Length: 175
Ligand SMILES: Cc1cc2nc3c(=O)[nH]c(=O)nc-3n(C[C@H](O)[C@H](O)[C@H](O)COP(=O)(O)O)c2cc1C
Image (tube, rainbow, N blue to C red; front, side, top):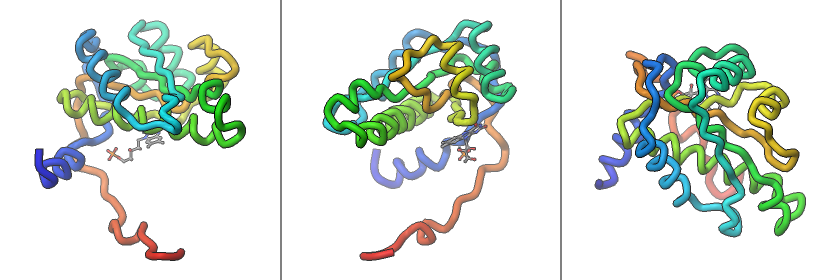
């Protein structure tokens, strides 16, 4: 893939919120996780974990915890990305809170792009009630849920989202 193919690959991904209610294959799940495990992480501690959810009742409960976002229930799987604070804080103390969140976020990004590479669709889902998600997934206290990545076969929107002009983000040398 050359650099213009890479940009095109990124531009052709959209968040998808309508799914076919069809499970992912084990091969697809493993591919997505293998891609995430290549991600960089602070101190190479890989301070992220993921809970792969395919059970219909658990998906329904997660959808409710995500303020009734239907795509969470319809997805082929939810990859619940979590920061693992024991891993990150054991070396980095308070700074490890930030690193754990960053590691989980990068892993989620890799998974989202891995899904796209497999011609699957996805939607990063960050709006949810933390405590409810903790209860549903039985998360221990040192694990913070960061995102519920919905992945499946679905229907991309016909109109792509727009972006700011890239230059609007950029400052040179100082703010
Ligand atoms: C941190 C984060 C949280 C998000 N949370 C939600 C969410 O709860 N529900 C949802 O439908 N989309 C969510 N999204 C998806 C964004 O709405 C979407 O990426 C943005 O509108 C740009 O659209 P695109 O992904 O199709 O390019 C989230 C994305 C990010 C990165």
